[in-house]
Length: 206
Image 1 (cartoon, rainbow, N blue to C red):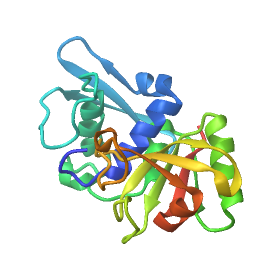
Image 2: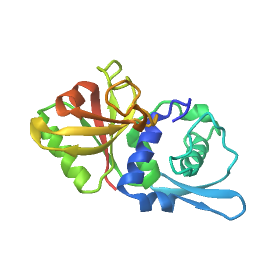
Image 3: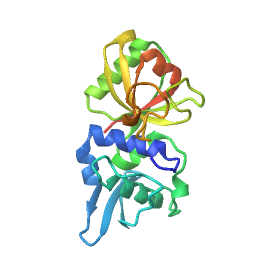
Image 4: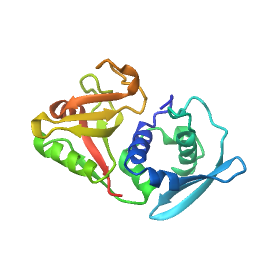
């Protein structure tokens, strides 16, 4: 994520690319003339946008492998979301809308309350089923989580109160000092820490 406030979009894109990379490959294709076709969904209907590769460097960045697909999909979303054709129009949002717009499938939001065991079981079973899950943080969570920010839920290890949840910050770095590798964007939390930091999770039903 660059300077644009679209963490909700990039966290969703990161999660979907990990849970179903084939779906992302189907969402964007080169047209062979320097332009690309990107597919979104509106009210269940496919919408295709044709964009060029003139990309501002201040917004989404290259992937670690030097790929530009994230930047291209973000640019197409700036055209698609409200039809305003501007990056500023995609600042601020919630992940449930994005996953539906990318996949055409429904989403489910689960508040982070309840027992640690029930939340851990929910996350574990849905990750195992291949679903994309993201999480939105409270406005002032404890370190290391950034406030009012979206993260991808990458994995969970263990069960119940002893489970450890690893989340990914779309900034590509941790954002707050927490572990020995600040530059990987990965943060591992107990379920209690997760519940204290995140208000809700968003599941893609694709």
